[in-house]
Length: 520
Image 1 (tube, rainbow, N blue to C red):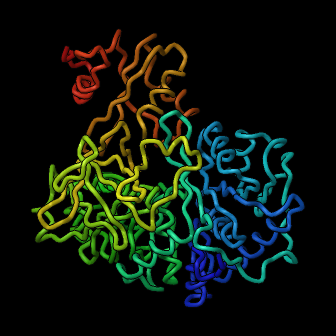
Image 2 (image 1 turned 30 degrees about the horizontal axis):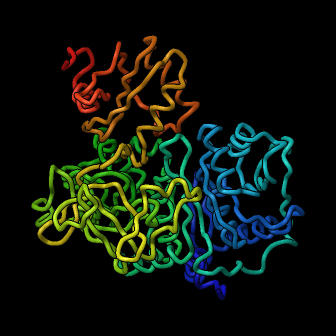
Image 3 (image 1 turned 180 degrees about the horizontal axis):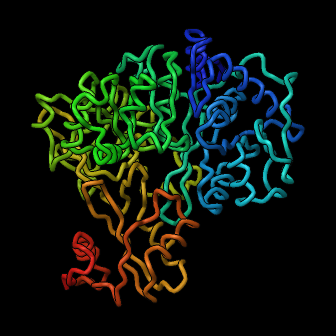
């Protein structure tokens, strides 16, 4: 298949470069980088990666926090024509190790935090060659790739639509993350739809609340860059007074998980008109509550608010509902905002418990150009993809209802996977991690709904241990966003009539305050 720059995900940055060459592409920390500066860095780093004596890499890991190394690093990886694997330096070493190995990463671009994480995950002797362009540390024993201006590419490499643009990882039911490869063709279809849906332009200032290993981070980057706008990673301290941060940056596009709304409400940032500069407000990653949409719209009255939905396997998002203060409240079910209609070019079905199509309510399955062709490990495909009508469909595992106006509304998960502050968490993975803790015999994780969103409650048997001790042990096994906050010791788990652990009863107990007598 003929390879062309126009088919590349990074062609969107080139569009922004043509429009906004000397204007900001990225503001991180106290530094602002123009499109020309980011482009030049990416060309230098890409050329150095390709000139490495070990040979051109097929997959490039970007192991960096939200600084210039992460953003220009992702772009550099794309410029090489290789597959980019965005990674998070604060992940446990075992998780980073499995991701590097499963994705076949043969070169890593890292900042100082990434170098530390890489050393813990693989060790300098077994790690692939490393390009750490701004590291002040010594080589640390790593095989280092040196940046030479003479190696800089004259222009980015072309790609074919079927070539992999990037690989992201979701939680794995066996404790091993599932790698999701996304092609350049899938991203091309997606961002063409986004261009038609939103009127982003070169004056837009985008938030970036998501870490770069989240699929939603791709939306921020390549919607902003495709329009010639700028990206502003939001530091944690900014959430203490978000209105001040938004006003200072003259931010116009906000995108986060709905859990952020509760956080900003608690800090007093959701007063009428407090987010006046916003013209787009987007939420994804978990269910959006009607009350949160109403309060946010009051704080950002000039913005259009959307609830958008989609698993990584369907390239960032695949549905959207545009909030209307007049009509949307009447469409809400159980206090949740609709997720809207499925993107143009895709087909979808609702399946009942026997996998038969149904018109009203069932599991959402989708097929179309945004769908991944399958996980890196084909063993993970089982149960997530099905053949129907001569085509392959992705099973989202989400139960949805079709409303009278044709839109869809999310009702909950069919399986043991839940959304916690944007993290897709499989309960089996958390339980596996808890069981590995010293003195724990068995563990069951159940979700409960609070004013702040979904939380996990762990019931465990064995030696009673302080919650702080258990959480501390789990931080070495799970990403911070997946570490439960609540732990309850029990002598034994309740059993149902089938002599299986009665998770329904545990969910009922999890909703009660600690110390309340058991519902047994």
